[in-house]
Image 1: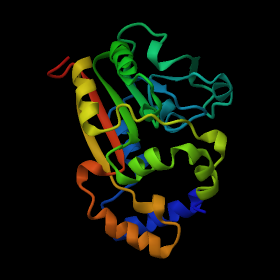
Image 2: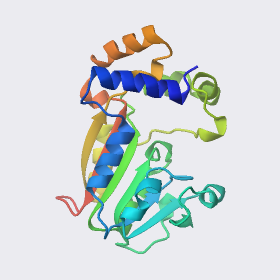
Image 3: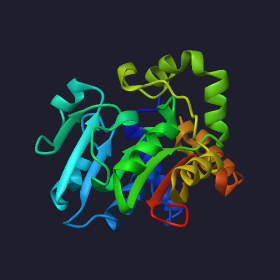
Length: 239
């Protein structure tokens, strides 16, 4: 089994080997912080009970969390945040309502991602930012998981990673490659910049596998790294 605490310990070891490396969550937080100010109108989509908005909601002018799951919103860990129960493909907001929209671990679950991205573009103000964190379907581990292990994914997550089955959701990866993301963003009117984040700890169930994963990570092309952090800007060359 690979509990999150053990995975994080291997991440610390990987960081010691590569001091310039940071987890995708840390990179996501750093990038979001670069784009918020005390005047920012912030929307977080699909964050469930919390996430990054818990940490930064008091550093912006207004913070709103949207999720389709009402019990999650009721139990939100930042109760002073505006909480709206709704769907990302039909955002219940007027045009140009937000300066920054965030979404972590959302895009991989969407059945119609371009509709969602269009909605995000609509409710962002000019020069607004859509900042997201999502898996990269170019990575061999994700491809293997999707095509070979998908029927038993819910069992593997709970048994291998010691995480609750109810905390896992079906993945579709409809837009989860750099090329697809660029195409969708360009069609909608965003200019997109991607960061590629490595993380060899998902198969580090013991020390030998950790060492093997670190070695294999060096062979994976940059555009195949397992996580993507994107910043899509409204009002660039295409919109």
